[in-house]
Image 1: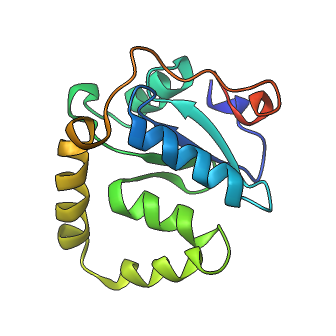
Image 2: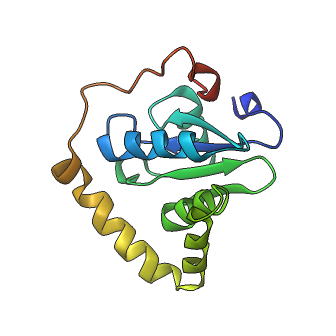
Length: 139
């Protein structure tokens, strides 16, 4: 399943029913000028296989996951900041927050993740990419 990811690409796994997550994916697509990222919902087959491989509890997965074949899996704030690092200026400046201890970054991340449905809402089903964007999504 993970072999679907083209070489030199990074896979962003996201909560497909979360409005904040879907907006984030749209933002990354718009700013990914070097076409480094591919996307899949956590609820997809590839999402489930990565969660299983890395022994992540799907019930407790309030996280954006970043997977690449050479680097493995990054989660929560670390994943978000590594994504930002590859989006060019001024987004890449966010990588400076990698200097902040992980427990502090993830505390903020977890607070937002815990409240994301209340603040941003939730869809009934995963988003369906437009035909133009379909190549960026793995299933």
